[in-house]
Image 1 (cartoon, rainbow, N blue to C red):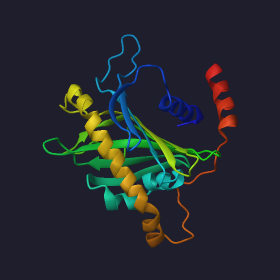
Image 2 (image 1 turned 120 degrees about the vertical axis):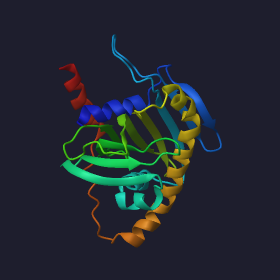
Image 3 (image 1 turned 135 degrees about the vertical axis):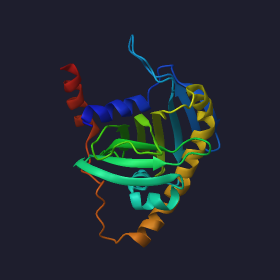
Length: 243
């Protein structure tokens, strides 16, 4: 993923174009979940699965901690009870890699797995982005006993708040493949996503303590990158779009 892709995710995360529909809201938790149909070009066949957006504000977690929580594979092994397997396949550059993730959904849904390209960026204004989409790779063939699902786009946009907390905007458009009807998944977004966001909050609260006990003070996290100034970033991207 290149600079225009990060801008596209950032702008889509904050879009207010009237296409989003509220499916869940909890004012006490400052959590809003919305969904929208996928945008299709004329003649294009869609998946039928809606795009979901969750927006939440946490005053007790800063963006850097959340960024590290989402990246740290060793920590994920301690809290992601649905994960069957997760491994790195290759590092493309310092902001992109390809990895494998297998998950055990609730019964009676069959196990799913993904081969995803993950991309990330840090900004000088304290914002962070992580996003992924599914790709093919020779070292990540389909496996017996798993349905190969597809992440069309999944993104985490983390924005610092004035009180030192985080505003998180989570975007997901996923095709689980197999025989799960789209209408069922679309109807469950307002139930599944709030639980996912709550679980992420609980895990992020514990990350700094876990990291201090399991990483040395001089540990250099491989996912940390030089910060980019959004202003210069946007000018360069606009030139690319104009071409």
